[in-house]
Length: 387
Image (cartoon, one colour):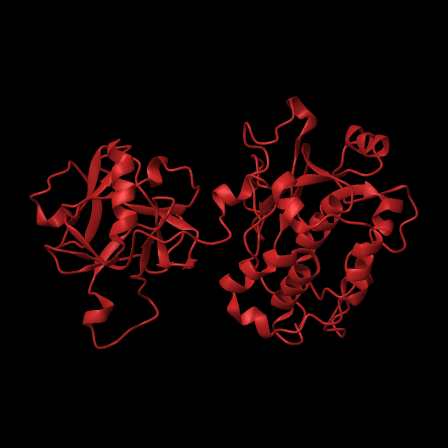
């Protein structure tokens, strides 16, 4: 995009000049493209491997189909989990959603669908819009693990976003066009979206009617049927949340806004101090997945308390939602038990270190107090663990 433009809609870069029978990004192998030619409607999308801007490393393991922005209700799936819509061998697997630009599709059918919504601005939301449109209007999509693309991120955004809300506006526009009554779940998570303007969506509504597209309830039942199990539209209540204070030290767990690999530490509880600085992060949620994440309910980060052994430090690690090293139990004796290692969270108040240790319910260094507790949910968790 020219530097002087400062603004761009998807209309300006949506393949309007393409003349071939297929629209696709690079990296598709010939056999993959032949499958698209053989079935006019299904889309195929490549796996998206994220590269460091300085190209110091490149990961080429399995990936989810896409990585959702924080705004929309999380219609995210792990694409090729065993037992989840998996097709044998190298054929790939059906996927409800994909990254917006990493696909191959029959050109004529792409234009029958109207291409990308021309009302979307800059970037963001197009992956949902094209995915919902493909499935609800008679097509299908599947992931192709043999075709891969490396995504190199810029260190900065080289253009201006006019209003600063284009991403949120795009997400609301997609929700209002395609999600029907399910759009309400978006607004429950992001109430600030209610008052944003979507622009005129009458043409998109008419296109959906003309194509005789199915409703979003059908999409959730027939295509994304397993998504609510992992990403419920209404977040179940947590078992505990707020600060986590150690009984012996009278200090709080602090993650310092760290990311993967950050070791949790003890620090002076923010609520006890005269100053509240941005460097502290002392609010945590023990949620329905039985993991512990930084942040308040409904606004947690995607990192979880993680421990690899009965003597290891407690660190933050990318949440995977599959329990294992990230599965915790908060017991009546105030200990935080780690079933996998059969150990409990302990601490050294003098060194402010937090680590795993053999459980000793009489040790006050292993006793922790959550600021808020939902006893109904907690008893349900503990009852499930003892059964």
